[in-house]
Image 1 (cartoon, rainbow, N blue to C red):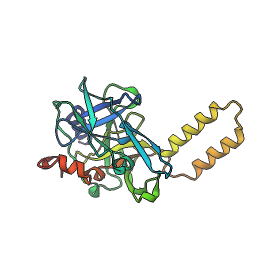
Image 2: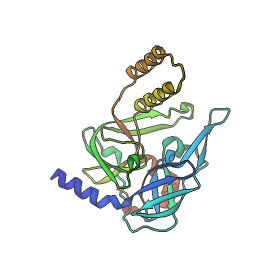
Image 3: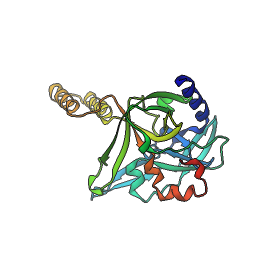
Image 4: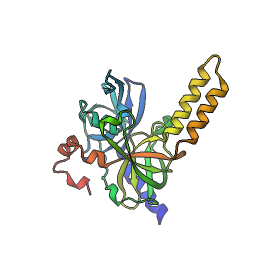
Length: 259
């Protein structure tokens, strides 16, 4: 029964999951329909880049040459979440509008307070250059809240669902489903920072002409030993989007997409 339920959920949802290309930044990720048939949700980091001003405040640059591939058809898209606000950037979500509607059903958003450790989750996305929707599953390991790492002074906390479902580059922006309810509870956002930080440090080390091997290796080992959740992945809680004023205005009168 569990396998049949998973298959039905994948079959029902895959047409609502799209490939997102930020051609300004030569990057791609995933998005999914919410609210209506021309509105998408994805990660902010899929469609933006940012720098810091002298006071340490991040300044976002959002993609303008933004395209979405929905069921094999490319459509122009634009960011409609508040590009002047720091909140979507720091909590890592973005709303997009397509130039026209697509023939697919918007996904239903669930409530994270009904999700517990041990619940089964399903993640959909376009990782590693795949042109087909890839599905992975796992269990919820924990739901955690942490201050936004970039600038904790801002007072924002990002709530994430920690799971062992495989998420790779390109999966960012895809939906995480609570398999029990078939509703979206999170936006797949990143592998744990340990994996990415170790990769970055190794690449930096390899690029050095005369690396001081022992020093760099000691740094990597110490960093890994002092960081938890190695091997787990995260999804941004869907509640951050639910509480966004832009999304509330967008979905007025469309309560059937909520629970």
